[in-house]
Amino acid sequence: MKKILIVEDDQFILDLYKRQLENAGYEILTAENGEKALQELDKSVNLILLDILLPKKGGLEILKDIKSNESVKNIPVILLTNLGQESIIKQAFELGASGYLIKSSITPSDVVHQVKEFLNND
Image 1 (spheres, helix red, strand yellow):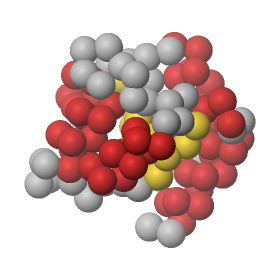
Image 2 (cartoon, helix red, strand yellow):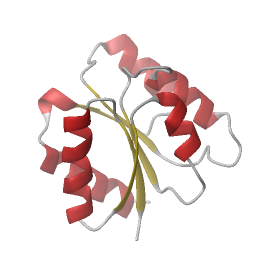
Image 3 (cartoon, one colour):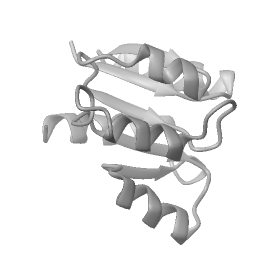
């Protein structure tokens, strides 16, 4: 079973994505802030869905930490955020993001579809 870490501070959104992805057959770990995300992270995670606006440590900072950590740097990270500014999207990919989804433009089932596509291409 593939394992996904969802990093999201909005409990409603976190529960929604968790439920959708569990129904699709994935094991889900969750973190509501950046510090907890880095604690939850281990080598058995297959994919990270990461919000950018988070308490304690922002998503781009977490992305930087992940990509500079030898043991977890190859885990794909998809940013799942409402920030759609071109400069932020560009920065995310420069830092090593594998994908960028804008929450307000997609449904939870779209997210599941994107995750499935991404993990099948893995």
